[in-house]
Image (cartoon, rainbow, N blue to C red; front, side, top):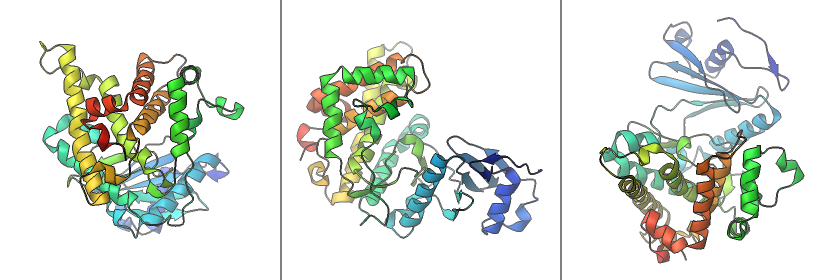
Length: 364
């Protein structure tokens, strides 16, 4: 492999040879591996430069910030990894190897595992066990004492989308602007987002962008949480609601939840089966979370007031995310907005129908 020099954000962009050399210099890659044909480098870049270096069962992720924004995000992610190394939650993190501020490089373990969605589709027998493991792991994160020297996270900007600034408008597509107009035209949604924004506290260590894509399940069954660019002290209800609301999104938008295995089954039967799947996740997830966090199976003791409001706000979040780079909103985005309004106006019905919870379980 020949090195190339391409500058971005004032730095040479990370290339394959440079990534391997970085692993050699920080001592995680043995020198004899560097020339072995079994060594592979794969480009998985998205918001930042991301190269995956693998040798048989071992693997590493080498990330580089390529813009001022992505460098700041990478700096925050590295700070979270370093801060959590001495906590009980470290077992649920990829191995941390190195961070170089000058070069804007972060090196972590490449985790081999399945996403929770893949587990759901491929191995239903592990469904409840994996959900419980995710709940217990998240509770360990939220029980971490102190801020670990990390700055508090403010409420997500999405909670103020009904009150946009001129600066924020430029980051929205025509489709997301239409969704924001829907929020502004709905008293229920405006009150909801203002209410959640006003309740925000930064009293627990959080992931702050938690969803299925940011969790991998090892073969052992242990969940590993990845992509910590937004991690830090925040409101743990945002994390919990993210995983619950995402299940509703899957049910509403994912054909795998609707298409019946039996070709003779009616669509309504498939919908009911999808809702049953949501409850099959919610019960072990919340039960394990509460037992680990509060030492009891009583959800009211876990300090999660108004959880359905937070799930509704997360549905709005997912709806707007689904409109990025589109000129016209998809029908599913509008359905998610209606679902969010329904959650906000009828939290008891939403709790029972989707999560199998009584109203007294989700309010202090």
